[in-house]
Image (tube, rainbow, N blue to C red; front, side, top):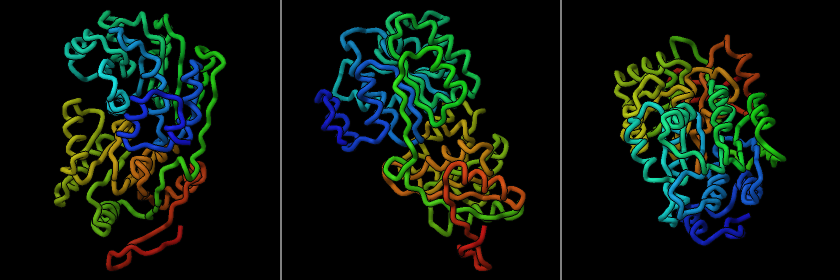
Length: 379
């Protein structure tokens, strides 16, 4: 189904065309009509399937554009994801000059956010903690907020925001619609749905060929001693110019970035201890191609949407199956074919086998021969 077949106003049609979209993804086809009809939605959909457009179009079309106060809030688990959602919504609202969209998150200057909120945005994108801060300080008018969207709901609730999210929903007395978009439907997501949704449209999008990113997956048996050489071989042999490498801890992320820099790679790291200004600077450099290798933790990488990432390399085996899906989903975006690699040791073989089976992933075993060339291997 094409966006042109939707009964939506011309400015949205133009905005979608400007963003380079013509055909709707499955989650967009299933979520937009019930949301336009004012229904609650709970959607389980893989990462990279166009969820922001799925809730963004109904949100924008539900606004009273001449009113200068918040009417919708989108809650996201991390600053990076909140920023990405804001950019996407601003693109969707490009031909609506009266619509203001503001992003508020922890770690940034509070007064600057207060000044933006005073200008009367219709949509606020926020992390739960900072949104609650603004409510407590009475620096945001919540009396007219009718629409709430929880994006990456499973991750947000698993990160300890369950009580914050419940408190926020209960404080928004004018609420008429709650939509949740999630890669998995966890117990916490189900609880929120049961408590606050009424006759919700339940949507499930399987990671099928049309909606899932196209990613060639590989795995390499390694050892502690060979791990760094194997990583650098992958990058050099393939001539990759933009790579994301995932580690499980902040310490290892920083250490690996330093090791790569000493080997003359243009590398930097992204983790939770960095200030927002540092994160923004690093992300801008990676997007602009000034950084070739970005080493990151899972939480820090949430919401990163960089088109044409050559490859994702799992330096550490992910701590959960969902993290594997989210990690490799950083490549293969915008209908480009992506590539991912997983480094694992003998002791991790069973864990890797189970993870691939449970995520319905197929990774081809490869190895390096004595010349450092990539050859087929056996798992």
